Image (cartoon, rainbow, N blue to C red; front, side, top):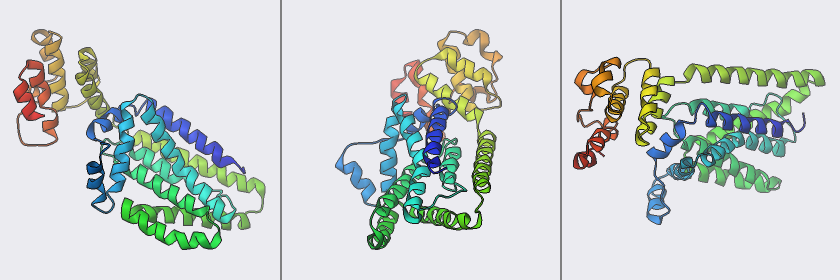
Length: 313
């Protein structure tokens, strides 16, 4: 049990990496397409000009690796697993004790479940990682130096990354340190002590599995995968996703009809697929909606109307 934190961090890393390679793989190209990172001083100045914006700069730096098939997934899995390992190492450094309840697992598991949503902000992971990393590095200082440096680091982290993150770090460390110091005094039986750890891990695993399955959005996954196939002009895969999609969605009808046109099957198979929005299933009317305008240019590119496609894009 002395080195269980290394085993758990390795298990977390492998679990996260497996899910990123499989069930959540579609999210990585989506996030990569939504963000831009530039190696330029002017780009950095934009984020340094406002308090708390540096977290977005760090997140965009990480997101650029999502373009690569494996690198981005490995980096994100590593960051999430470190959200458990860093507070554990910090607590052990400060208290010389281990937390039998493994409360430090909660931030990484919670953010992993939240990552299922396409609207999730990667900056929440990177900012919390940086906050935990800075706290761990400060904990390596000798006694009085740690207490002298902790307050300036707390203020600096809150100013650059956002005040919520050092507060979360402080709350997690306080809670883990409290249980690490208190429970070993109350539970002297080694078997009961180990049982508490096993029960806690079982509860965390069960709740994470339930939350992941309950919030997993298959329709959103199919929609994002369909757009990726459209960009690669993989029209048969677009039609396959449209057949698997359940429910009404104008964007899915739009992509499906585009695939029918490209494969030459529109005159024969148009009515075999749902046309829930009538003529608006064939194109997206201009309604000055920034979210909708991201997709309207695809049709004009396929038809060769480059000027109109550029106006939408």
